[in-house]
Figure 1 (cartoon, rainbow, N blue to C red):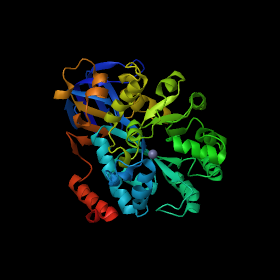
Figure 2 (figure 1 turned 60 degrees about the horizontal axis):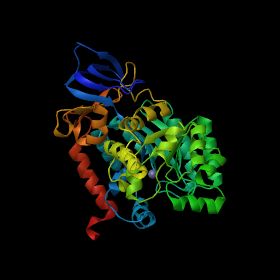
Figure 3 (figure 1 turned 60 degrees about the vertical axis):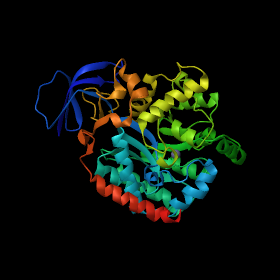
Length: 427
Ligand SMILES: [Zn+2]
C-alpha cells in the first residue's frame, strides 16, 4: 500500500520536537520520505495535522462490553457486585466482540498501539491480527481460576502463548501478573522466571489504591513495589500500571530499575483512588512515564486525547502550579516515551520509522486559530477530529470510515453479547 499526505503540518516528535510543513510518503509498513514529494499513491490526503499514533499503555480491551455497567460505586463494591460476577460468565466469543469494539474505538480516537492485560489473551491477539492493530498482549497470571482456565494452567499456557506470538510483526506477547495482592510470592517468582526465559515485557498493577498498599504491607511486610522487586519482577522491561500511592524513595527505585510507569488519570479519578501518580518527581528522576486509559468499565472511554488532557490538568490543579505537566510532556508520554520504552520503531514521524500515523482534519471550529499545534492536540482537540489512521503502513480508518471491518455487524454483535452477559431486561 502507498499513501501520500500533502500540504500538512507534521508533528514529528523527533529529538528537537520539530513541527514541519510538508508532505509525508508511506510505502509498505514504512515512512519513506518527508518533504516536498510528487509521486503517485493509492491514497492521497491533503491539509492534515499529522502526528504519531497514540500509544495506550494500559487496557483491558474486552471490558468495553461492561462500559457504563455499574458507575459511581466505590472500587471494592464496583468489583465485587458488578464486574466480577459478569466476568465469570465471559466466553471466548464475548472477548472477540468486546475486543473488536475496543479496537474500533481506539482507532477512531487516534490510538495505533495498545498494551493490554486480560483473560483469553490469545483470542485478543488473534483479533488484533485480523483487525491490523498493534498490540502488546498481556497474558494475565493470577491466583484464581479465570473464566478461561484453572489457575494451575495459567503459567504453562502463558508459555505456549509466548512461543506462538514471539515473532509476530503486530502482536507482542507480554507476561501480566495481575498485582501483588492477587498473586502469591511463589506465583510472582515463577512469573519472573518465565518472563526472564523469553526476555518478555512484564505488565503489572502497582499501588493503585491506598487499600492495596496497606493490604500488601500487612500480609508481606513490604509495599507493592518492594514485593515486585523482591520476587524478581522489577527491571527495564517492567510496566507498572498506576503507581498512585508510591513514595519519593519508590520514585527513585523505579527510575534506577528502568521500569516504566503507566499513568491512568481518568480511571483513577473515576474510581476515586485518591492517590496522584507523582509525575513531577518521576520526571525529575528521569523515569519513563507513559499514559493509559485502563479498561472501558472504569473510564468509560479508550480515548487518549482525553487522557493527555486530564494527565496535564490533574497535576496542575493538585500542585497549584499551571506549569506542571506541560502539553509537550503529555504528548511525549502518549507517543515517544512509550515507543522508546517498548523498543518500537514508531512514536515519531521520521524517515525509516514504522508508519503508525494519525491524521487530524485541522479545519474544524475547535482547532482554529492554530497558534500552537501541540497545545491544540492536548487541550483543544477531540477524538472526533481524527480523520484517518494508518497502522503498520495500512490505511485502517479513512475519512472517518473503517476500511477493514463491517461496522454495523460489529454493533449488532455488541448489543447481543452485552444483553447475554448482563440480561439488560432485568434492570
Ligand atoms: Zn487495570
